[in-house]
Amino acid sequence: MQGKSEQRLLIAMLIAIVAGGLSGFIWGESMIAVAWLGQLFLTALKMLIVPLVAASIITGVAGLGDVRKLGRMGGLSIGYYACTTLIAVSIGLLMANIWQPGVGVDLGAGTAAPKPAIADIGITDLVLSLVHPNIIDAAAHMKLLPIIIFCILLAAALTTLGDKGRPVIAFFDGLNEAMMKIVGWIMIFAPIGVFALIASKLGAAGGGEAFFAQLAGLAKYALAVISGLLTHAVVLCALLMLLARRSVAAYLTHMGTALMTAFSTASSSATLPLTLDGVKAAGVDEKSRRFVLPLGATINMDGTALYEAVAVLFIAQAYGIDLSFGQQMLVLVTATMAAIGAAGIPEAGLVTMVIVLEAVGLPLEGIGLILAIDWFLDRCRTTINVFGDSVGAAIVGKMAPQSGHSG
Ligand code: ASP
Image (cartoon, rainbow, N blue to C red; front, top):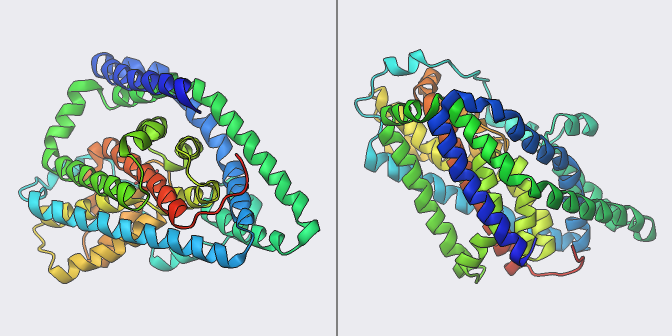
């Protein structure tokens, strides 16, 4: 989406977020009545994810035309993901040490909240999740990582087949264009969807008063997470200027719709269609965006990594357990792994945090302490996750520039 219509949509989205927040704040639970409109928007976006990820990765990789270029693009992307995630966790650790949000917290507060379904997952499970025995089943259950791996292999194979491979690649190219057309149509509905998502979620949380009461109970923790996320946003902007040589204001304007959708849906996967559209409008090299963004939306989660570090230190402080420097380094490594393993869906980070808690020997029940406002912090961290992905596409696009397709 370009120019005037992009600006109009951006303004409509801003108004929708403010109006949604105010309506949920004032009318509370009665706003749950509009939840279905938000659900409709979210479901329409989700409908596009699997075909879009497949078509985007296959055309992106095939467009590189040479396995060595894929290696360079892949290496740059993974390098960017790893570095920025480690920076994010370090900022999270710093914030938790400065704010000390868990000191003096009433442990009884967490036991009142409903416990999350905690699955016992380890690092080997993360590695195993890279492949899936049945690709149709993976698609049916939206397991994006095995789909991405399969599509990279398929595209690499197709490029070696010459004339036989070309029509298959052309098919996926057409599919990709068609999906992006549908994204444009769904975006017309975005302001209504965003309004409904925000108003109904705030309403379900009990309206403005209940929300502020929840926030006040965990104010220091929320401040530590949010100030960490803002600091990381500044780091990402600096990287965008220095490495991708782009104007931050212009880039943010193009990404505005995607960032606001990320905030409203709390899902980087559901936001992916809009992230692709925003980065395209920003003029990022197309092979970079087609390859880097679907991969990033699945494994690159700076906001989640930062939040997990703060949350784990918060839980340790609440239980009166002092984490040594060595243990905090363990948090650095495991929070990075846990963020990679988190799916781009709401509150996924809450579940993969188990890896970090187990690594440093903290009680898993501690998660109960932070549940009350997780729905809100999830939105904030998802916005940073999506921004991190988009900055990655711009940087990789700048460092490994190759052009080809048009859309
Ligand atoms: N909701 C986040 C995302 O989709 C993941 C998480 O941190 O829970 O990016």
